[in-house]
Image (cartoon, rainbow, N blue to C red; front, side, top):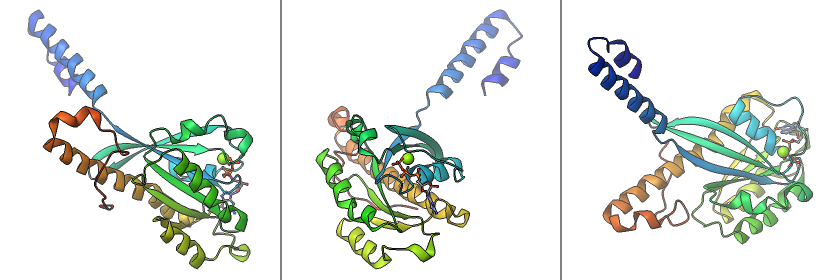
Length: 238
Ligand SMILES: Nc1nc2c(ncn2[C@@H]2O[C@H](COP(=O)(O)OP(=O)(O)OP(=O)(O)O)[C@@H](O)[C@H]2O)c(=O)[nH]1
Ligand SMILES: [Mg+2]
């Protein structure tokens, strides 16, 4: 602890100076201990609840009022996975074409995971998922980048248009996990948490494997990028 070292540095000037430098070094090390950042993008039609889901995960609440996202909103949450602190950086994207077109390249650059969202009370938002997946594939996002499907607004029970069976079939066909949930219903908050945590767990596991692969080929460390070049498929350890 740097503060404790500084408090005992009174016996001589030299000792004081070296302890002060130790304190500085420790502080610098503490500052530079790397926290891994996982970039997760949230994609889907306008009004499906991307901003509300992001809010629920990062802030723990449902926003009273939202406006259409322009470009992108960033939110971060630091999570603990098996003792490692990981920063989950959520990119809440705009669903409206006019608010997103200049940003699309940025959304997909170095993305680690993708959350596709539809509104369970709006069939068109489910049908449009094909288009969102095409856009994602069109930006050279590796098939190894984990993707999940989220049906939001499940609290609106009487208005459901997209049956779970249909969504499940679609999710299976695209190799995605399906979460049906509600950003609004506080009882669902654990489920919203699971969406992002399941991705973070998978990413952590993937990266651990990558490190192991790299140890076997030390010369290639600099050239590989995560996760586009990862060559091992893994499952969530949680
Ligand atoms: N009933 C209900 N309403 C929700 C839920 N999630 C979001 N909404 C409402 O749906 C509307 C749109 O939510 P947003 O989160 O702003 O939608 P968005 O997908 O971010 O829209 P864009 O930013 O335009 O792409 C708002 O009126 C929210 O209050 C939910 O789980 N249940
Ligand atoms: Mg939004």
